[in-house]
Length: 561
Image 1: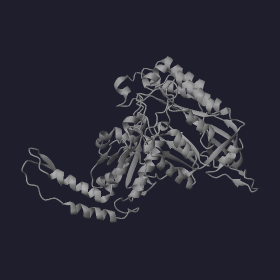
Image 2 (image 1 turned 60 degrees about the horizontal axis):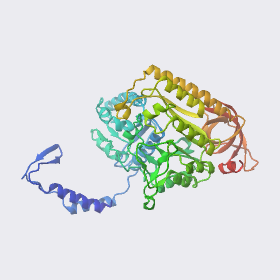
Image 3 (image 1 turned 135 degrees about the vertical axis):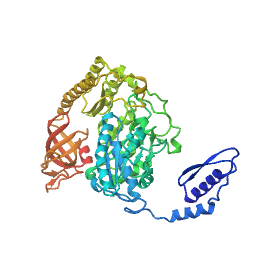
């Protein structure tokens, strides 16, 4: 909204607020609180339209804040917990604070503001934050003694879920901001500077931060995450996400493509498209596509909500993103199995820079438990999808999520999950014991009746079976050449490098001089951001090891196969 329009609107609001209404008592704000204003009470003369227009003109002349200037002051320390969406949220929050004059520090001791970007998916994740706050409590006390104020903020999902408890528990936290309130951080911090607590946990139906280009924080700048949508409408009975991140809404494709082009220009070689339910993407920003038909779900899958027509869908976005840079890998996470139309699978198979790797979160191998989870499919429908995916994309790498000990899970249900792990043979798995969350359907309708020791035992069994099958899946690559994007030195040895193959599996290999596939005679050393061919010599459940063959490019490697 233009400044003069804001001024006119403010004047109208003031006029309507001060117009007397018979028989109605109002509350007028004053510096020391509020006092009632009854019928017939005299009101002092307020500002007129010229006052607001002068303010709007001054606002237009005001320069953009620079780092270290007012309104932002001091250094910010950011700490991220949880999923990759939280990593992206951290980058968005920092972009907003940087524009408002704050500086970033990696030294906790010199920070004026400490912000924790939090997760609420499981109780263990929240407990990690409470433990961290106890450590920060001592730091804040020392700073107060030295008369060096320290402001502490909780951002993200835990802020959304536990605002009242966070603010009132030991009075340690100064600001609380939910996932849709990051634009408000400068104001919240300004309020906190005056010694008051400040909070904004309002969920939005349209906030996607589409106009904010996140400040990438990935090490080395080789890979990056691009948020394409926020929230989730699936309402699985165990999941807190719809209550902490709100309803689904998608970014306009134009803004996504702009961000991916910027990352390509910066030399980023792999982009992961992010969303809670990424393949239900639906951009409604272009009028001509608002009447498009609703997509068809995967065979045997259903939703708790009515299919939504209109908009540009995920297949279109994936097509456009993959065309930007033929040397940039494209991944996406996290999808829902219901949203895999054939055009998406065909696109993945055809494009050399879309990774042949899919995340298919199953959660359970028992149809009865899947129904209680409100997942919208049976075991049989899920397995049919897996077979269809493998037929459509030969050599595809599969990953999945599983929950051990969900409400009412019997030993027979558990064994069905074990057998699903054995039948599908995933390359990568994310397995957790069930943690009941308030507000979810399971909290209100089901009983968390599987004892903790049984949950633990079942989880251990699932992990053991997953690892056994993952070793077999990864051993099938021994003797093959894998295209690997170099990320940097191995954590275990300075003499080795690490990277990831197309299937998102970590690959370790010696840091030695190699030839370049382009044909130049000089030997080179692989650098972060390079593509190299590695011949796999051994495999574990999580890692491949091999020997370097040569440096190459994504396009050249695709052309040779």
